[in-house]
Image (cartoon, rainbow, N blue to C red; front, side, top):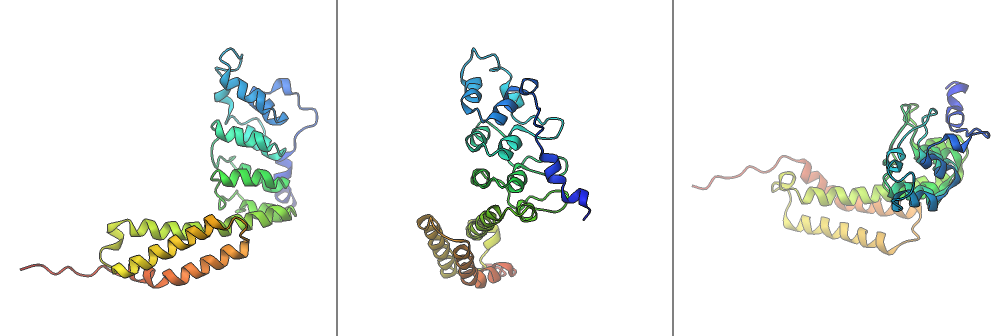
Length: 239
């Protein structure tokens, strides 16, 4: 990878020290300053000069391809990040090169912003034009706290995905079609419920805890997944 590519995230994310806030739209100004109160006023005060136009600027990108959420994330404006999302900032929006707010938070070491984005459904597997997820970007820029958090979030999400995949399969008659017996369904549902309860009741779980729980669940569900992957039994016609 060339040196130009190696530094592309940082070059793309530099905020010019002489940026003139008066030249920016109201949402971008609030994002830069972290001015949540002013931002909310635009929406809730019908007499505000920006009331009619503020919504149109939430996802507008500037000449550097940054949207307000990108800027708030880069600067660590955590309350502003949450408010932008609440007011309609697009989930998983990216530049033409595939950089999302999650990538920017990882590059800049904004772990609290990462947490807000992940809690609001950002895709941990989203990749930029260099095939990097946010985790790889954080690793490249030595943002170890961000790497650790993203590993934790991915391990948790993998467990949740495994639970959801089995539950969705069991709820679809077309996917079951008599492939498994009632006892198998009970085992699968019980195992998924047990792991869901564990997730809910273990707020301090570590990355390794999530990995171990998923491995245990995979082992319990493996025989059932095997049966579900086989052709359905032939139906015998009644005479």
